Structures are given as C-alpha cells and as structure tokens.
Image (cartoon, rainbow, N blue to C red; front, side, top):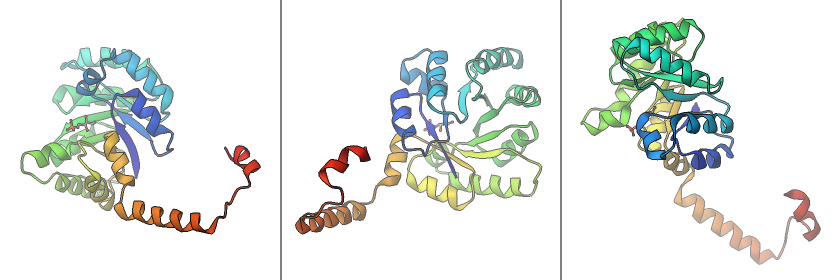
Length: 227
Ligand code: E4P
C-alpha cells in the first residue's frame, strides 16, 4: 500500500518524507488556503521534496478553464497530478488530460457508480472520501470495498483507488485489508500509525535493563562514525 500525505504544509511534508514512507502528496483548495501560501509556490516546493505524484486541484468548473488551469499546474513540475472534481466537466477534462499522458486524480467521489465513470475517463487515481461519508452516518469503508471489487472485474482499468478523507489509523488498516492501492493520510494519522503503548512500555523496559548491564554497543570513538 502506498502512503500519500494529505497536506499543503511543506514543513510537515519535508519532515515525514525523511521517513522514506511517503509516496506522494494530495492537496486541495482548503489545504492550500490553510497553508497561507500561493498555490503554485506551495506545489513547486512540495514537488521538490517528494518525487511521487503531487495532486494540485483545479478551481474552475467548466472544461475549457479546467484545461487552462491544468496547463499552468502541470508546468510546475513533472510529478504534478491534476485533481478534478467528479462532475461531467471534470470527467471531460480527465479524459482529455489522460489522453495527453497527464496523471489525473478524480476527487469528491462518494458513490461506486462515480468511480466507474472516473475509470472509464482514464483517471490515474479515484479519491473516495470515506471520513465525510462516516460523518453523515454512512460507512465510508463500504465504498472502498465496492470500488475495489468492481475494478478487480476489469483488469484493463488502470485507475488506482486513493482512499481520501482519512480520519485515523483504523481507516488505513481497513483500506489495506481491502487491497486499496493508496491511502492519503493527514500528517497526524501517519504519526499515529507508529504508536502503541506497549511499544513505548516495552522499549522503556528494555532500555532500563540494558542500562543495568553497564554495556555499550559502540565504543566512544565509534559514535561519530555511525552518524
Ligand atoms: C484528499 O485528496 C482530500 O482532499 C482530503 O482527503 C479530504 O479530507 P477531509 O474530508 O478531511 O477534508
């Protein structure tokens, strides 16, 4: 399973990229607004930190203007994926861009039928928003299950299921169990994935017992060479 970071906060992305676990980044207009940055500057900086796909979302609602915006965003870096909404104009834009070899992320997917349309339009990624479905009393993960099952019936569909609107580690684990290709996770969720109280407790006990032995693995003059 690939991990994308769902953020436009370059400092956070840079920090998490150092783990070697980050395969891409997703942004949206809300995340860009939260960053306080000019969109093109934020995307350029993110693309210099992460070599995988970095989604930049169009803000127009008609195909002609979406295509014009996509041209500007694609020029920022070769790893920019153009994010379009799941609307008739968004999917027309997706079709045109995909035929030009541009990666397209179709966003705001809330139904399996929408995901079929995105695959037929040549999307590189479909973004089902599971947290927002949970928020209204539906079970977002059922949508992931449906889309994975449907796409599996059509091996010529190359669209990857990019699980979005992730609220916690349980979403990541459940999506992985279903075989979703990617989860885009807010920085705090990626950090939460590391955490277990028994890991902390076990490490503290190991270190306390080690301290009692008076041993060190590295000789004092070896510390510098190891860094
Ligand atoms: C990612 O591409 C989406 O824009 C994002 O996951 C939406 O998450 P939210 O529902 O927490 O805003």
